[in-house]
Image (cartoon, rainbow, N blue to C red; front, side, top):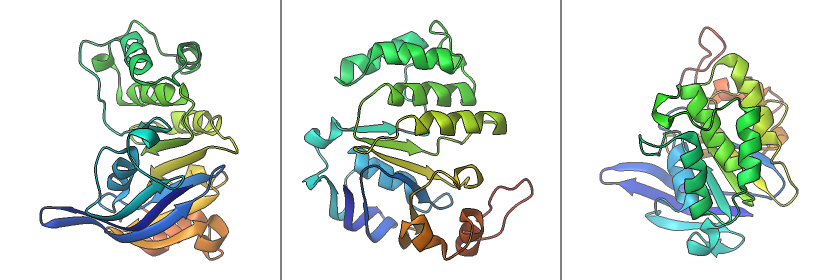
Length: 236
């Protein structure tokens, strides 16, 4: 189980999260929802151990986030984090050096499925191809908590379904999948639990049925954050 207990995170004069509490169970596909600036990425970085809360606790299986939990948590950030000289194959070796649960054979299989060429340089990849690489790396681990920060950003509409289907292959009764996003249409039928953040505050958290109040995911999102723009995406 992942728990936030009265978590506050401040950056100098800005408060990114304020007194946020929720819990996520294993075996669930969970959405962390909200527009840019709502606190999604900050929450992800706290869970991944890349940042530290100002107050409160972030716990995984009852343990505070630290060296022991990092080995069980895989994090896919929005930004690229590889050196420019690296090839896709180099990125796999990098992960193999850092994570004991990384499976190189599984990585090779994901590269084939994502139509990525091992010899291609990371800096030359399009945003969509770079997202596929980051996804392939995460899915080649056996982490019990997998974090996907805005995995649909920069991905064309035809590729989004491929990304979602790839993430869902990691579903397991002992694993939690946490996806942050503001693109909700494609995720309506796969989500179990929703956490809505707004300007660093928790709006609500619980099962989709509990938080949707009888609405579709998109309609509930619009009710909380704003109006749908042309093309079916959300402005907030």
